[in-house]
Length: 336
Ligand code: DAH
Image (cartoon, rainbow, N blue to C red; front, side, top):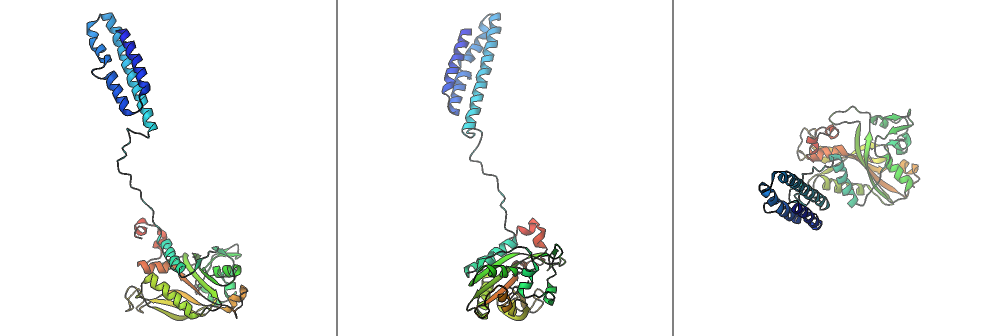
């Protein structure tokens, strides 16, 4: 019987070399450990032999059984690793749900505005958020003591050497300094003013600047471009009106309003019962600005406009408090 065990051991170690997949392993398990295996019949016949022999053969047979089991397990494990878990991974199980992020409504609004102006031939330009007084005010025709500065209370850095830009208009100057006309740019970005936060103010907010300069640009071009933008952004039924206004860097200047998207122009609390919502500032580039960037004001004309991105987003999506954009509550953000 001991010989028989030796023979089984040898046979198993020969056969196991050829096992290459889980099926052949299972066949070997049945052949060497199954009910009809030689090892099982050796164990069954232990009762027929002498007591001393029984202890020895029984012990050897059980050891062999454990060895075979361990070897089969080991090979199965190696095989699984090689095949990427042929047996233990069920490839038909559904995947785990991935939660995809969303664009912030301000990013979404900026991209939408940029998309519209890109189709109208405008390129995106950017500028620094830390500016000098020269670019933020002086080159834009705000002399040092001009009262128009009062509306844009700034955050100063290094005792006034720099400031956080209060508007995106300085990008106009930076672009014109570097480029010869024709110019057609839009410039989205963050701006900063020393305002206390409330439903319509935030010390950090976003603007979208626009500038077009060429030899033959007229106020009608400004109206045409802005009219197209407003129709694409808010809908064809929305009306636009220009109201005379003042900005140091444009002349003439205008405030542009749209018919109230809440009440359709009849008058409601959102539009202060006027039927109109102010959405942006605009005008024809002031000759003094052209002089600062060495453009000949006799040769070139241009228009500029600037809008608050938050204001556009609030009107478009019906948001009543600007602070909601920065609190980043998922309940709010997930709606867009
Ligand atoms: N920068 C102005 C502001 O923050 C907005 C503005 C008005 C920009 C008229 C322009 C413009 O380019 O032409 O109040």
